[in-house]
Image 1: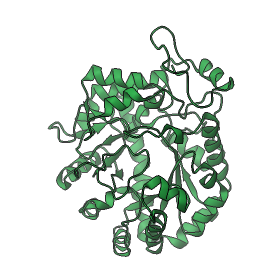
Image 2: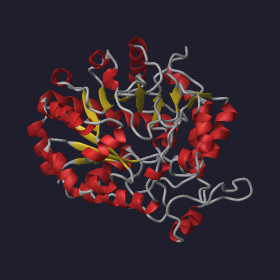
Image 3: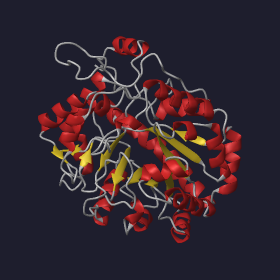
Image 4: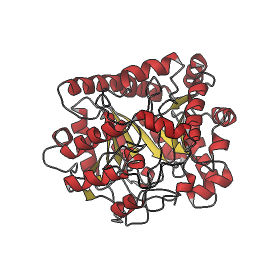
Length: 432
């Protein structure tokens, strides 16, 4: 698998893109994690990877989206973005995720990338606004990879994304990226309507045939103003996704990313481990993209390093979440999220102003933490990389949750969610 992937990538990607990936993301990314680990030993937190949502606007209306795409356009000004990235670079950071909305609606996106040739950017996009011209410019820069979201076949994509012709236009953007020699990825939010189509070797082979270099499978999370819980996966399907990813990594010459498991297959949350936090289009520093509450902002006078290092709100989120679950705290314990928001007086960072009401409407459900169902990495490369640069970094050493009770709930046939309104004050529920 690895030799075939390497040969295909060397043959299809532009040399400048390969060099920037290897140096800015590969070597400098590993060094940034090593610096992160040294900070942890000193009791300091500053994430080696920052995710920046630079604009809220989008040309699509996807099911289950938590971004305020209907609200008036809001974005981080270029000067603030540049200052934030420069301050993070001073701490050894070199990798940044760029999100939206749709990042290609940000007029100065390419100027931002050009300002930081010593960094590497992953752009989360629907691909529809990537023209031949913009793809050629990305090739000249070499320091960015488009991660194009595809939610299913033509029928499912158009249904999920809220407009006709979505699949065709997205594939056209994908073709522009591949033809320009960009390192190109495809992201899929796996849900009930696309799991059978896209969780298949045939789909991966099709992407390889189209020139895609890597894929990112993540599972649908019912959050936001229109949660669509009927799209969420059952625990047995979550295990199915994990097994598929591990198996295909050893069989198919395409890189497969996941962000919620370590080398032994144990669940983790990047927010809890401290490896990443999120900045909203208004500059608010949030625990992660789906937790839209904040106390601090990147414009705070202390600078982003001191702001994140000293944030009691973010520290509490990491520590309290890590004591109760290895999974997604907002899915499993929305009550804890509400308590933390109230304790710190965190503000609702959505433009719609309904984040607390949405939190109250959520019912606890299982996420990626499924005790007894761990699937360790098989391929030596993924296992090695995760062990040293994407583990839990000791974040769960004080965990107090009752894994046995949760495992019993799984074995007893509870396949969609825990009992409604668990009593979290008198005894641990299946999610504590």
